[in-house]
Length: 226
Image 1 (cartoon, helix red, strand yellow):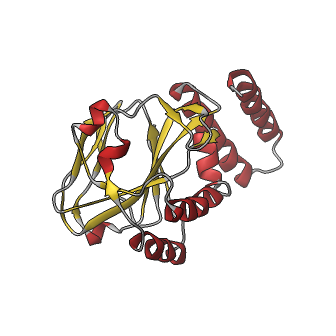
Image 2 (cartoon, rainbow, N blue to C red; image 1 turned 135 degrees about the vertical axis):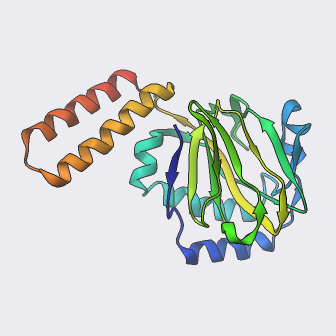
Image 3 (cartoon, rainbow, N blue to C red; image 1 turned 90 degrees about the vertical axis):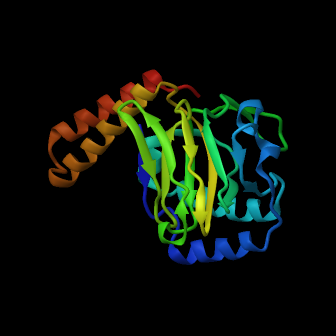
């Protein structure tokens, strides 16, 4: 399930984040790649202990904690601190699958990567190429979103970033462990939640709204891992 989360950050937040990120020191992205990824990865990243990454990452996490669409689609349990990358001059990241387990920096705690997140800081008009290609159940999807928007997709998906042939692609990327491990169950709960919200907005006092909400929470109670 691919879900676009629009307007995670405001234009003012994006502009301030870019000012901070532009002043930071970037390193070779291969430093954080696994064995498979290092062979096909060509980009620049902020170090995991970068003060700039911590500052902008905190803004991202605060915004997501107040975003109903993200919370409904992801049902997050643990979120890794956001990381940052940029591509220019033909840089690319070939087809790969994200590692299944990530270690939280500084603490040693491990989390399962159920969902991958990419938040865009450069608008599509600022660079050529740089599409995120995700292999979904129904085929390949090319993603290139406005600045401040984010895509959420299963970490089990094959995906790649096409070469950036003009300008610079600047993004944040990170992973999360959902309360719902299974993508199919997570999709069902998301679709049910969206339907309940639409039904409730049109017929708020209808008794079926309460009944359906109860079914949603009983399924969540049955399937959730805490």
